[in-house]
Length: 238
Image 1 (cartoon, one colour):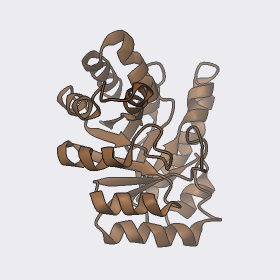
Image 2 (cartoon, rainbow, N blue to C red; image 1 turned 45 degrees about the horizontal axis):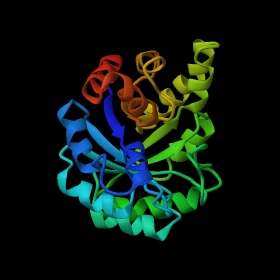
Image 3 (cartoon, rainbow, N blue to C red; image 1 turned 90 degrees about the vertical axis):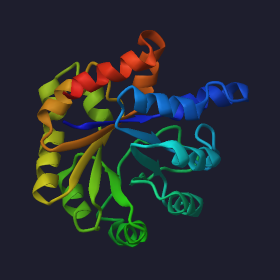
């Protein structure tokens, strides 16, 4: 069964909107784990508009499941943050400065040498590395030569097209996952996965290791409560 890592960026966004410490990010992370989440994900950005760099240090002290730090490794500040905190996993995302949310994967062909170099930095520190990629076989092939442990499939296109034609929407992801598996890569996935489309995705993607879900899960928690929502997502992965 694929593991569920809860991205708590939106909790930090809500906290930051009023200042202070309500909701308390640390308590939410503890509760997510207590309610069954198998990992905590954060995606700090240079402007600290949601997760602050200090949050990462604070979370590292209390997270008992898998701690996954996502971000733009082209920022030295991000590299330093990850190396200082030694998470179980770092997910490398090709964000631009000021980007609202991640919207594309790495060009693993064009950035081949850069990825080899930066992945080595984290691997030498004993951190598992995952890189954000689109479901394109050529990109998966090239990802396998970078030294990364895993890929994270960028699933916005699947989510966008799911209600129109779910078989067509998932087809490139199945092909990408099959290629990754044959090449010995672990497979993560994330972006716009939710209670409507997650089960079908998990049932059809071979060897899916982990999904990282934030926006949809936190939004659902406003209606269903955090504990119930996490259990609902775990049932979709069962």
